[in-house]
Length: 127
Image 1 (tube, rainbow, N blue to C red):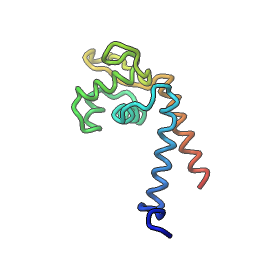
Image 2 (image 1 turned 90 degrees about the vertical axis):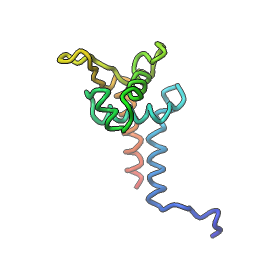
Image 3 (image 1 turned 60 degrees about the horizontal axis):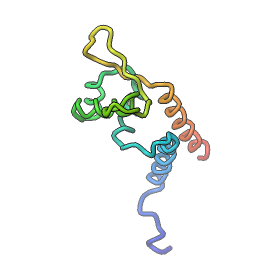
Image 4 (image 1 turned 135 degrees about the vertical axis):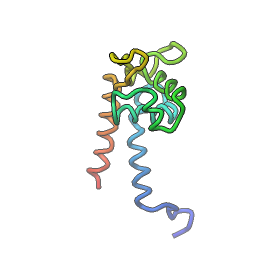
């Protein structure tokens, strides 16, 4: 086999790349192009554990709260420019501390999470 045809990564790493392709495909179907990876990470953090605050998500991502605030705004109903956001999450005021907001998936966000799951299940079934 010629070197330029032989894969330079392992079969397991190739499978991981296939899974990544399947997982990001539903993002293309949103009709906004693919958002920055920071938005995808913020979405995944919320989807993994809903109801946390901006500071808690920022700590998980290892970024400043101000950056996470912008990311969550942009994937929410109204982005930081006061325009329509991606509408993937909602932020609700914490009834016990009105200074805090807690993020949850919107109906559109739940559908995206479902579509990603379906794509990844399809990959598992082909193995």
